[in-house]
Image 1 (cartoon, rainbow, N blue to C red):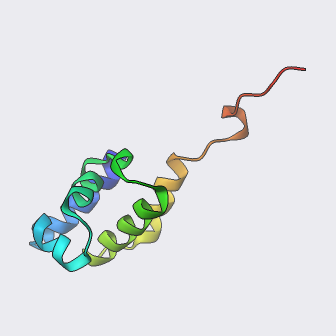
Image 2: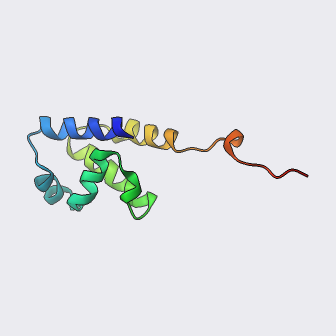
Length: 88
């Protein structure tokens, strides 16, 4: 998830925004904005909150949130082959 975070950070810096300014504009706590940039998605209290923050952050810095959300979801999907099965 580091690549998503790096993309967000670069877009924020290109806009000339600090994390504090972005927190004020998005009403997302600075610690969660930092977690997004760090790719540390485990810091979020739930996936719904994470996806909402990711969408809002991306939109605020001029990125299309859909590809970012798709990359996040694609990296976190479990396939049937990954799921353990019980033996009869």
